[in-house]
Image (cartoon, rainbow, N blue to C red; front, side, top):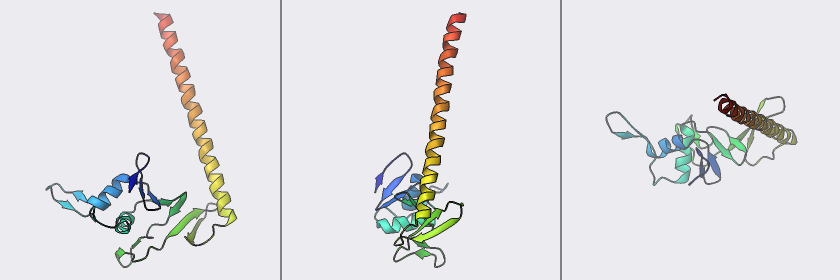
Length: 150
Protein backbone atom coordinates (compact mmCIF):
# COMPACT_ATOMS: atom_id res chain seq x y z
CA UNK A 1 0.00 0.00 0.00
CA UNK A 2 1.28 3.44 -0.83
CA UNK A 3 -0.20 6.90 -0.74
CA UNK A 4 -0.30 8.71 -4.04
CA UNK A 5 -1.83 12.12 -4.73
CA UNK A 6 -3.50 13.94 -1.86
CA UNK A 7 -6.50 11.73 -1.15
CA UNK A 8 -5.84 8.42 -2.93
CA UNK A 9 -4.25 5.15 -1.90
CA UNK A 10 -2.53 2.61 -4.17
CA UNK A 11 -3.25 -1.01 -3.19
CA UNK A 12 -2.20 -3.92 -5.41
CA UNK A 13 -3.12 -2.85 -8.96
CA UNK A 14 -5.91 -0.57 -7.77
CA UNK A 15 -6.22 3.11 -6.86
CA UNK A 16 -8.60 3.81 -3.98
CA UNK A 17 -9.95 7.31 -4.44
CA UNK A 18 -10.73 8.13 -0.80
CA UNK A 19 -7.88 7.77 1.71
CA UNK A 20 -10.13 8.67 4.66
CA UNK A 21 -12.58 5.89 3.79
CA UNK A 22 -9.65 3.49 3.38
CA UNK A 23 -8.47 4.41 6.90
CA UNK A 24 -11.98 3.67 8.24
CA UNK A 25 -11.94 0.34 6.41
CA UNK A 26 -8.64 -0.62 8.03
CA UNK A 27 -8.78 1.03 11.47
CA UNK A 28 -12.51 1.53 12.03
CA UNK A 29 -13.95 4.55 13.81
CA UNK A 30 -13.74 5.83 17.37
CA UNK A 31 -17.09 6.38 19.07
CA UNK A 32 -17.87 9.16 21.56
CA UNK A 33 -17.27 6.75 24.42
CA UNK A 34 -13.73 6.31 23.13
CA UNK A 35 -14.14 2.73 21.93
CA UNK A 36 -12.97 1.76 18.46
CA UNK A 37 -15.32 -0.26 16.26
CA UNK A 38 -15.05 -1.74 12.79
CA UNK A 39 -12.05 -2.00 10.53
CA UNK A 40 -10.24 -5.11 9.41
CA UNK A 41 -6.96 -4.15 11.10
CA UNK A 42 -3.47 -3.45 9.82
CA UNK A 43 -2.59 -7.15 9.66
CA UNK A 44 -5.45 -7.98 7.27
CA UNK A 45 -4.54 -9.03 3.74
CA UNK A 46 -4.75 -6.49 0.94
CA UNK A 47 -7.80 -8.33 -0.45
CA UNK A 48 -9.56 -8.08 2.93
CA UNK A 49 -8.79 -4.35 3.02
CA UNK A 50 -10.13 -3.95 -0.53
CA UNK A 51 -13.30 -5.87 0.36
CA UNK A 52 -13.95 -3.70 3.43
CA UNK A 53 -13.27 -0.52 1.46
CA UNK A 54 -15.67 -1.80 -1.22
CA UNK A 55 -18.28 -2.58 1.45
CA UNK A 56 -18.06 1.02 2.66
CA UNK A 57 -18.78 2.22 -0.88
CA UNK A 58 -15.29 3.45 -1.71
CA UNK A 59 -14.54 4.32 -5.35
CA UNK A 60 -11.89 2.12 -6.95
CA UNK A 61 -10.01 2.49 -10.22
CA UNK A 62 -7.72 0.14 -12.07
CA UNK A 63 -5.70 2.35 -14.36
CA UNK A 64 -8.25 4.75 -15.86
CA UNK A 65 -11.09 2.25 -15.53
CA UNK A 66 -13.71 2.55 -12.80
CA UNK A 67 -14.32 -0.68 -10.86
CA UNK A 68 -17.95 -1.48 -10.05
CA UNK A 69 -18.95 -1.50 -6.40
CA UNK A 70 -19.37 -5.08 -5.19
CA UNK A 71 -16.39 -6.43 -7.11
CA UNK A 72 -14.63 -7.37 -3.85
CA UNK A 73 -17.54 -7.53 -1.39
CA UNK A 74 -20.67 -9.63 -1.99
CA UNK A 75 -23.54 -7.48 -0.72
CA UNK A 76 -26.13 -10.28 -1.11
CA UNK A 77 -24.12 -12.77 0.95
CA UNK A 78 -22.89 -9.95 3.23
CA UNK A 79 -19.28 -11.13 3.16
CA UNK A 80 -16.09 -10.54 1.19
CA UNK A 81 -15.82 -12.43 -2.09
CA UNK A 82 -13.46 -15.41 -2.00
CA UNK A 83 -12.39 -14.53 -5.55
CA UNK A 84 -12.88 -10.91 -6.66
CA UNK A 85 -15.34 -10.46 -9.51
CA UNK A 86 -13.87 -7.32 -11.05
CA UNK A 87 -16.29 -5.50 -13.35
CA UNK A 88 -15.49 -2.18 -15.01
CA UNK A 89 -18.08 0.53 -15.56
CA UNK A 90 -17.95 2.78 -18.62
CA UNK A 91 -20.16 5.42 -20.18
CA UNK A 92 -20.62 5.05 -23.93
CA UNK A 93 -20.90 7.98 -26.33
CA UNK A 94 -24.63 8.31 -25.65
CA UNK A 95 -24.04 8.38 -21.87
CA UNK A 96 -25.37 4.87 -21.19
CA UNK A 97 -23.67 2.82 -18.46
CA UNK A 98 -21.87 -0.26 -19.81
CA UNK A 99 -20.34 -2.98 -17.64
CA UNK A 100 -17.49 -5.24 -18.75
CA UNK A 101 -15.69 -7.95 -16.82
CA UNK A 102 -11.96 -7.47 -16.34
CA UNK A 103 -11.12 -10.15 -18.94
CA UNK A 104 -13.28 -8.62 -21.72
CA UNK A 105 -11.76 -6.42 -24.41
CA UNK A 106 -12.93 -2.80 -24.24
CA UNK A 107 -14.90 -2.05 -27.44
CA UNK A 108 -13.73 0.74 -29.70
CA UNK A 109 -16.88 2.80 -29.01
CA UNK A 110 -16.11 2.81 -25.26
CA UNK A 111 -12.50 3.77 -25.90
CA UNK A 112 -13.75 6.64 -28.05
CA UNK A 113 -16.09 7.72 -25.25
CA UNK A 114 -13.19 7.65 -22.77
CA UNK A 115 -11.05 9.78 -25.08
CA UNK A 116 -13.91 12.24 -25.60
CA UNK A 117 -14.41 12.52 -21.83
CA UNK A 118 -10.67 13.04 -21.25
CA UNK A 119 -10.61 15.79 -23.90
CA UNK A 120 -13.63 17.43 -22.26
CA UNK A 121 -11.88 17.36 -18.86
CA UNK A 122 -8.67 18.78 -20.36
CA UNK A 123 -10.65 21.54 -22.08
CA UNK A 124 -12.39 22.42 -18.80
CA UNK A 125 -9.06 22.46 -16.95
CA UNK A 126 -7.59 24.77 -19.60
CA UNK A 127 -10.57 27.14 -19.25
CA UNK A 128 -10.18 27.13 -15.48
CA UNK A 129 -6.46 27.89 -15.73
CA UNK A 130 -7.23 30.73 -18.16
CA UNK A 131 -9.76 32.23 -15.73
CA UNK A 132 -7.25 32.00 -12.87
CA UNK A 133 -4.61 33.74 -14.99
CA UNK A 134 -7.07 36.54 -15.81
CA UNK A 135 -7.92 36.95 -12.12
CA UNK A 136 -4.23 37.19 -11.19
CA UNK A 137 -3.61 39.67 -13.99
CA UNK A 138 -6.59 41.77 -12.87
CA UNK A 139 -5.45 41.59 -9.22
CA UNK A 140 -2.03 42.88 -10.31
CA UNK A 141 -3.64 45.82 -12.15
CA UNK A 142 -5.77 46.62 -9.10
CA UNK A 143 -2.67 46.76 -6.89
CA UNK A 144 -0.94 49.13 -9.33
CA UNK A 145 -4.06 51.36 -9.44
CA UNK A 146 -4.18 51.53 -5.65
CA UNK A 147 -0.50 52.56 -5.49
CA UNK A 148 -1.11 55.30 -8.09
CA UNK A 149 -4.07 56.60 -6.08
CA UNK A 150 -1.90 57.07 -2.97
